[in-house]
Every structure is written in C-alpha cells, then in structure tokens.
Image (cartoon, rainbow, N blue to C red; front, side, top):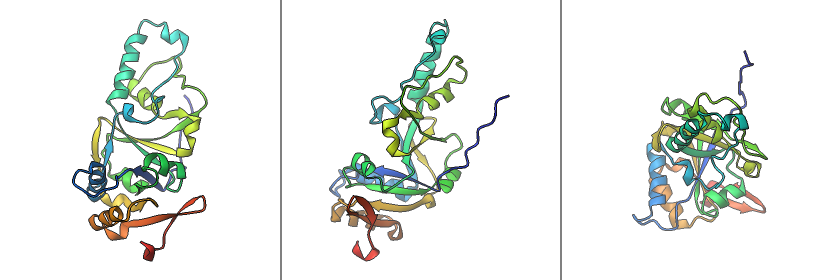
Length: 230
C-alpha cells in the first residue's frame, strides 16, 4: 500500500481577481456580476477552454497506453471530463502586480479576499479545491487509466512553470455556472489602484462599507491605502 498524501500547508486566505469595467451603467455586465457575487455569496465557474492559457488541459501519455485498444475510449472520457467541469481560479496572494495587470483589467478591477476555511465549509459537497502544480514539461499521466474524472482534475491542476507567479488554487464544480457559499466568507473587497473614483464609489455604495478598501502604487508595490484616503 502506498504512503498517504497529507497537506497541512493550507492558506488562510484566497483571492480572486476580477475586471469591472469603467462605467456604472446597467450595461456593464462585469461590474454587475462582481457586485452580485459579493452581495449573494456566489462564484462563477467557467469552462476550461475559456481560461487564458492556451496550453490548459494538455498532457502526455505513455506509449504502451496509447497503443492499448481501450485508449481511444479513455481519451474521450478524459476529454468529456475536462469539458464538463466548472472551474474558478484563485490566488494565494493579492499584491502580485502581474495578477492585477492580467486579471483585473490593468489594475482597474477588484480583488476579492476569502477566508479559505469558511469558503470550503460552505460550498456544495460536490465541489473540490486543488493547488496548481507547476512544471517544465507536460504532465505524463502514466500507464494506468482508472478514474477518468479524477484524471481530468489532475490534468487541469498542472501548468507550465512560467505561470508559477500566480500561486493558483482551483475550485472544481461538477458543471459550469454559479456556486453559492456563505457570503461571510468574503473578508475584503480590494479595489485596484487605477479604478476610476466613480466606479469605486458605486461598489462602495452597493456592498458593505467595512469590506471595501482601496489600494495605491508605492514604488514597485501595490499597497493598501489608509481608510481616510478613499
């Protein structure tokens, strides 16, 4: 029997970067969705093909497996497993400049902070979290194909090492769409340093005031502003 795998190094907080646009009209779907997700306690899980890494879901297979008569069927099941999953992406850090640039509309968006334990405890039982593993080569799935659903999650939990700055965790849901959780798991709504003031005021008006904080650029760092500087 192999040794068990245990992970004690769980983060206390996770962060999700979102773009919110630059206007407060009813036509701004990004802003509306972000506010509703905060107010209701929900998280959108999308299809893996909508993720920005064109290499998502790639893997290698051992030659003896590829030659097996059952491999074609197994590969279809893996493909269907990947396509059926809903995925939401989180980070262990909120002050990584590249995250603000790539996922929060060039520092104009928001970063939502979650209490990881409270979030996990209130999500549906069918969901699961996975810490992303970063490597310099494609994942080799080995010579045994057993649980293709778990295999699909494993494949989607591996990325090239150039993405390691993201320090990513993924939430997997059985299907795409919104998943709900206790909104008290949200600890802060961190507004980007380049967010227009009128958008910041709009967000502040529609969510609990004690959640919202603004940031600023200080040298090469993103830092939290003092409360009176909002």
